[in-house]
Structure formats: structure tokens, C-alpha cells
Image (cartoon, rainbow, N blue to C red; front, side):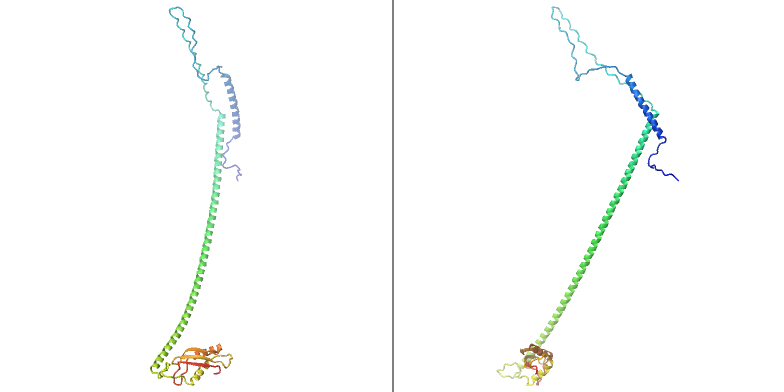
Length: 342
């Protein structure tokens, strides 16, 4: 079983004999410092240059010519003496001494080699640490980027879910609204159909009433037409005098017993359960066609009791036809009085 190794697997391998190399490097550095100190002192004592000084003007100036002696007073000589030659210019200052030649590089010692190796090792460790730090930084950035991408992906998924939920709610709302509109439309259509059916029934009822009214009016007009025809036929063979004002063929009226016949036929149809007095008398004008069909009923004199008057009219309507007289004819119009005990 292998022992647990706490050393970082990415750390550089330690070189063997590190303590010994460090001690050797310290000794070599101490020796090097001593040698440099001795060399500096020796150079100072051995190469002291001679002392010399130079004076320089702050601005370049041209040297003045040498002083010339004034000429002697003129003497009576044939020729003057020539002037002396000018003094020579001072020599230029000597050039500075050349710098000493550089020393030849000494051969590297073992200490220098060890120091150089230690520097390279330290630089290598530094580079490796920098590389490791760069790898760690990149790993952290990669993890942070992955975490950021994960958060963004989760946010996008959450936003997408919320959007889908909103769309689903909107869809359900539209469907509910459409269903409600459909129900309202169906209800309105049902009400319209009911109103239409009611209107059709009302129109049908009115049409039926109109048809009945038209039929009754047509029947009345036909009876009147037939009556007019009979009157015209009667007038063609009338036997009345010149002063007669009737429109029958001959002067005639119902027989004395005709009123009893009409009363006997109408009385069974009178329905009046209430108790009434005996002195009631309702006068009614009845018009009939030649075949006896009653075509008109009109109360000419009321009895003062509307219930009795209505009972008489209903009885005549129920009777429908009048009996024929002894001559076989039916009077076209007659007035009949009805009493309760008749």
C-alpha cells in the first residue's frame, strides 16, 4: 500500500543536494565579494595618475599678438633698423591620456557556474509558478464562465417557460372568450328563433282571424248580393200600387204564428242561470237569407240588463237559421222581442 503523498503533483521536482548547493553558493558569494574588494584597493594604490590641471575659458577667445617695442626716435641714419620678429604662439595643451585597456575576462569559476545554475533553477521555478498560476487563473475563469453560462441558460429557460405559460394562459383566455361568444351567439340565435316563431304564430293567428273575417264578410256580401237579386226579381213582377214604397214583388209579411215559431226555436238556446225579473224585454232585429240563415243580429232596444241582452244574442247565433213561414218563405228581416218567461 503506497503512503499518502501530500506534495503537490504540479510542483517542480526538487533537485538533489539543495542544502549543499545553497551553502556552496553562499561561500562562493563571500569569496567573490572579498576578491572584488581586494581588487578595487589594489587598483586604487597602483594606478594613481600624476596630478595635472587645465584651465579652460568659459568662451573660446583668440590670443592677442605679442607686445611690440616702440620704434626709437628718428636719428639721422640712412636706413631704419628692421622691427624684431613677432613672438611665437604658445603650444596647444597636451591631449588627455588614453583610458587604460580593459582587463581580460576571467574564466568562470565553479562558484559562478553554481550561481548561474541556481539562478536558472530559480527562474525555471518562477516560470513554472507563473505557468501554474496562469493555468489556475484560466481554470477559475473557465469555471466562472461555465457558471455564468449556466446561470444565463437557466434564466433563458425560465424566461422561455414563463413565455410559454403566458402563451398558454392567453390561449385559454381566447378559447374561453370564443366559447363565451359562441354561447352568447347561440343564445341570441335561440331568442331570435323564438321571437320569429312567436311572430310567425302571431302572423298566422292574425291571418286566420283575417281569413275568418274575410270569409264572414264574403258570406255577408254574398247574402246581400242574393238579397239584392231577389229584390230585383221581385221588383220585376211587383203588384204594389203606384204609391207603394216597398221593394218586394208583392206586399206580404210574416204570419201571426211566425213569431211563436221563431221563439220556440230560439228559447232552448238561451242560457241564463241567474234570477231575473219578468218584465225584461229585448227587441232584436234579425236579418236572414232566403234559405233562413241568419246573416245579421242587432239589438234595437235593450232590456236594461246587459247579461240578458247578451244571452239573447248568443241564442240567436247558436240557432243559426230561422224557420220557414206557412208559405214556405223566410222573411228577410224581422224584429223579435224576447222576455224571460216567453
